[in-house]
Image (tube, rainbow, N blue to C red):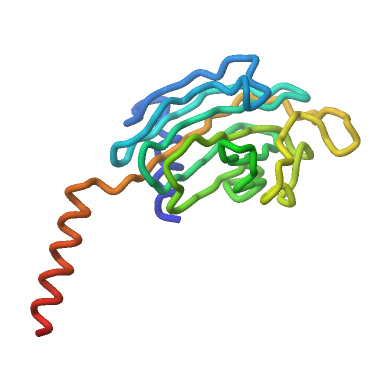
Length: 185
């Protein structure tokens, strides 16, 4: 939860200072095949702030690649509305879902030890998909179960923080373990 708090602070300061890269969502990005590419990440504590707009019956998909295993935190911010978020593996399986885990009706997720690879984050309006989509291939598509489009329309910010252990930190951690082991003997 500490990483999520840091991302909340980062998004709230986005108008004045942000220690990461910026990305503006562009249509058409309504499917995994047409997802906006956020890039590759392999350094400690990288982040990206996405500025987007969700229309009625719209879903926005973004892809990113982890070159190494990482912990990730996703946080969204918007004025009024009710959004949902899905995280999807390259094969199309939903691995995480969020509805109101952030402030108000805003989705937020934290995923630990995500393996290197390509992933997608989908952002849509409430009633598109639900938590039962995790472990399935039911992707957000802008439509509810009855085939009608969700009615949510709002601008949003989506912050993605990548926490990748720095090689030096891992080496120091390992050295600390060796020292602790030697002291016990």
